Length: 68
Image (cartoon, rainbow, N blue to C red; front, side, top):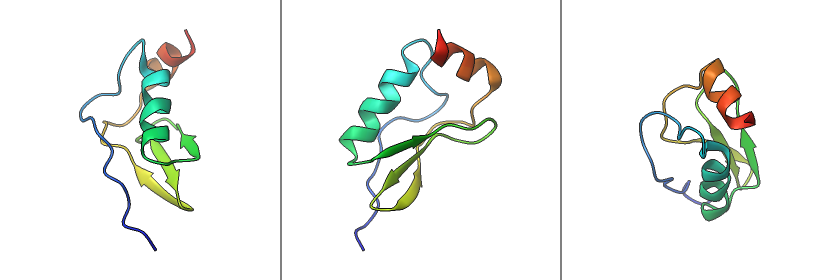
């Protein structure tokens, strides 16, 4: 099994541009799925394993911002 990729970023999830930013990071890491669940951290599926992204836990307002 491969070593999980290092995914850039840190701190709070990126605001208004958040979803596209997370999808781009997922693709850059070779991920196939992006998992977003309040109050968890964004997760990416890479080679069948879920890898946490280096962001703070999601809040309801984060996910509302993703939808706007």
